[in-house]
Length: 385
Image 1 (cartoon, one colour):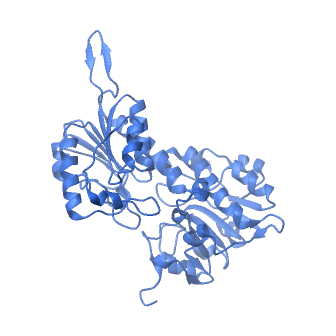
Image 2 (cartoon, rainbow, N blue to C red):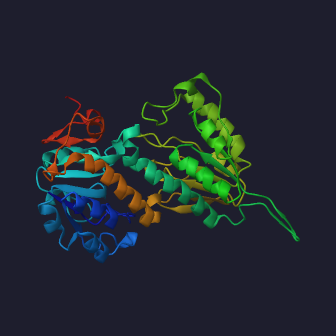
Image 3 (cartoon, helix red, strand yellow):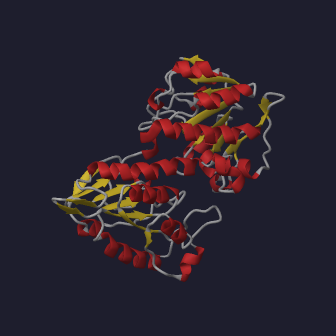
């Protein structure tokens, strides 16, 4: 059995799908591991470190993928017509592809995986159950994104974060509002508090109140019966009614006028990011304020966000950078690679050194997009199926 780890080729991606630590674990299972030359450079991992862990370094992508039983990636493979080699075409029929495949962003790719005979598993679909916590790539990467978002804000904010009492006068602490108290939001709250800011947060899920307050933040939310059902069984926020959105927007608008930094983290799987900050709210913020929009790649929580850019409007800086976890590539890769190891290990029969997948397993069933030349995930069945 052979696992191959290619270099990531999509723009803004600096992570890698394996580390020397996880390579050692795979080799200990009796699996051959091949890594493309230079795959770990952007995550500060040398080819020599992979070789010392037991991996074979291969410089040619076609050679790397041709006989791979399992292909581990961070982002979905490049396809025909995209900028770079057609990675999918280089994989053999029957290969198992495991990555953050972003199927909602490119649903046409799913049929291509099936046509190529590749079994594709999307790690972001791993259910949020106790048994799968160590495989949860969304949580591991969002945690780092929330931390980095605060640092990105501080980098352009031209005042101090904590209160400072000096002989020359007192500097007031910065006020930070976090919109969306999921994994990224909670880490943003914790980071801003550690830097000395006064922090408030909002979320449609009432259960977030206790978590926010435990970190020292003030919870801001419209009280409504609708809030009781604002969370899916998988732990994600649901889209709320237009009336709730209006009332929540009014409350956020009033709160934002007093804030120095806003961190937006709200995402709904498979949908455009909900609008939390509109043009009018941006213009109501004080000059020198900063907005960091972690939802930029899904349309943005702020209506004025320019995906991939840092802009200034009416004295307010809006940061819409792509792929924030990748800006912490060394740690992001270490956590992601461990998630992959924990996901793949139960699928391997160590005695036979081969894949032995239980397709009825709850985790496997939730993550599998294609199998045996067919699209099998219920969310992506053809309309006439």
